[in-house]
Length: 88
Image (cartoon, rainbow, N blue to C red):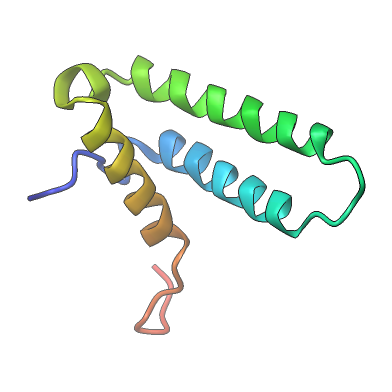
């Protein structure tokens, strides 16, 4: 089944999801005593991404699960290095 995320049309959503992924990685690597500030940054980024996902109409059209999973896949694909070794 084709993704409900169009890389060009939903580039803003993909960027938001990539930011969320980056923040989760930072949180996992955090070794400080108080990670509450870091967790709050993650919560805010997730809230922003979720609001944008709903505002896009994808949730209403395709359901939350499909839209959310396809967005995560699209963000990982966009962040992956080009296997051919050539950039677009």
